[in-house]
Every structure is written in structure tokens, then in C-alpha cells.
Length: 445
Image (tube, rainbow, N blue to C red; front, side, top):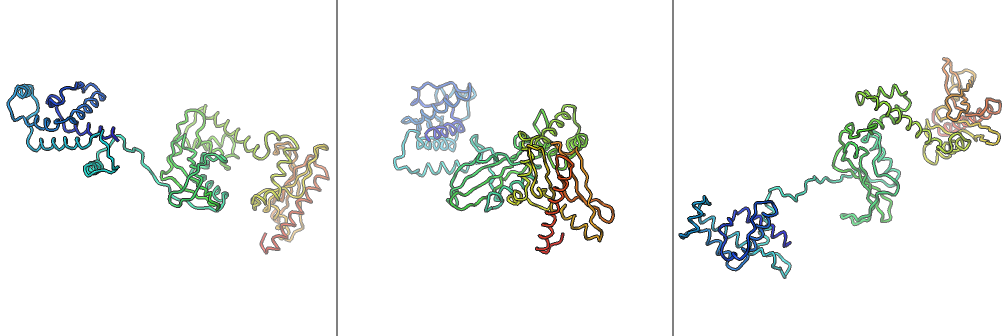
């Protein structure tokens, strides 16, 4: 506080323009620094002037010295050197008021009662009314957090975050989303409830300087309650990238979309050129490498890399896509593939026979019977579309217009009678269960 008051004194003296050549004799025993050489010397000079004004009789001597009413040698010399013109009565009164104010603002005085007197309050009010920009003022604009919604479970909160990421982050994710990372405890000032808080930036924050952020709040006072809030800043242009090498994040997310994964490299390059402009040879090679990594990631999401090419990998696939596993995750949808029946996986005899389909495809077996034609089943097998090299057996039927409709697929190690029989029985059993379920619910197929 004392240092701040001394700075206020120095600034007021500098604004008043006190000439050093006319300082009173009461402060003549102190050596004046030159000043004007650098900002540090100027501040030292101002602080020393303030110290001199605190001496006994310095206030009156200062006011008397500026009146210039008498004849003296110093006055004539000052006029010959082009010094300032004589001050009027109003200016002398202003300087006297400044001197009295400095006398009240003694930096070494202590307020025993801990309260501010009237002059200090007046100085504080004057300082607050001063609208000039200050060097220590906050330069960044402080924006507020607005509520997005409240959720009863963490799954609902994560679904909303994913929905916001799909629409606002070009299919990316909000950063700092690792499990158990980034959470900080605090107490809400308005409600007094304890909560955990985590701020997640836009995935384009580092590359495009996007200031958009969302905040997760979890109340930890017993009730499971989640809240999402949004920062006041909006998203910037995500196509602007500061990356100098490789592929931009915007291009990576474009190539990772489901509609672009199935494209060939040539068609994918055409899509990138249409969105991002011309590409040099280095960017073309980088895009090819990105698509290769994306393909590997997609394969490893189905079967782990350490289990690929083994019977264990097939077992992992069947376990994760069984009907019970999908029902537990709530992922058994109309077009979700699942394993039908019990799969045969025997590493000793090198035998594999797995049937899988979707609820919509299984319904084709029932729809074909509504045409008034006898059931016609067609089976074909190909060997080139399965990563593990197994046979892919295709089961389907034909309608009255000779259109082929798929009922299900089968993975088998050989095209023998046992494999055909097992896969056909599994598909027929699941189709009968589907028809019975729809009839019980009185739903159409």
C-alpha cells in the first residue's frame, strides 16, 4: 500500500510540472538525481521530490517560491534563460492543494483504527472516476459460462458432448477427455455444493486457435447430477491451420468420416482437392499414409492387432458381436450386425463356421413368402473380402421380379455340407425368432 501511495504522489507531481530549479531551501541538504536519462532516473527523481515535500516547512516554502513577487538574482536569471512565466493565484492555490494532499498521504504513516479517513475516500473516488487507460488494466475480455443442460447420468452427458462435437468440431472430439484426467474440486459460490469441474477445449484449439470450450460439472454431494456449460467465445474458422508439415486436422477428420473411408485413394484425393484446393506431391503422400493408418485403426477396432490372423481374433469378434453383448450395450438396432446362433470355432481341427446378419436382413426371409411364390434360396461363396482369409458364404432369396435380397452371411473354413447346414440352421432360427417377436408385439416386418 505504501509503494502504491508513493507512485500516486510521483505521478501527481509529474503532472503538476514542479520545476526542480525552484525547490525550497528546506530540502537543499539532499542531492537531486539528474533525471531525464531513463525511466528509472525519472522515477527516482519524482520519489525524492515527494520526500522533500514531507519536510517541515517545505509546503509553505514551495508555495511562496512560486509566487515570484520579490526581486532577486535567481528570478532575473530564470527570465533570461526563458523559464516559465509567472503563475497566477489560481495556479498557486492548485499547487498548495496538491502539497496539502501529499502531506496527508504520508507513505510512512499508519492508520491505527484500520479505517480510511475522508481525504483517503475522496482520493479513492477520484481514482475510480478516472477513465484513462492504465497499464495494469485487464486486457482480455472476460466471458461468461452459459448452461447447455443438466443430465442424470454420465452416459447422457457423454452423448450430448459427442453430439456437440459432431456438429461443431467437424466430427472431432473435445480435448482433455481422458478418464479421470483434468478434474478439479471446488465449491459452487451460489449454491454452496461441492463439485468436480473439467474444462475441455475444441480439438482445433492448438492448430487453428479456436477459443471454444465446454465445461463439465459433476456434483459430489451424494446425488448423481451432471451439467454442461459453454464458454462465451464461438468457434473460429477450422480450415485455417498453422501446421507446416503433414495433413491438417480438418483434412484428417474429412478422410475419417464413414462416407470417405470406403472411397479409393483417387476419389479421396478429389474430395480433399474440392474442399482444400490444390495439393502438392508431399501432401498427396501424406494423405495416403493417413488413409493407411485409418484403415489399420478400423481393423484393430474390430479385432485387436495382437489377435489378428488367429482363431483368438475370430473369437474376440464373435464375443463382441453376440446378441447378448449388443443388448447389454443397447446397440442391437435394426441394421446392427450380430452373430446368429452358436458359432463353431475349433483351433485344433482348424474349423470355423459363424453366421451373422441384421434384423432387417433376416426380415427378407419372411417378406419373400408374401409374394405367393415358393421359397427360393440362393447361396454363393467368395474368398477375397475377409481379412483373415476365410470363406464368406452369402445366403439370400429372390422375389417375383428376380431381385436378389440378402438374408445373412456365414464365415467358414471350408465349403462342405457341415458348414452349409450349420449356417443355414442358425439363420433360419433367428428369422423365426424375429417373426415371432413381431407377431407378439403386433408390429409389421
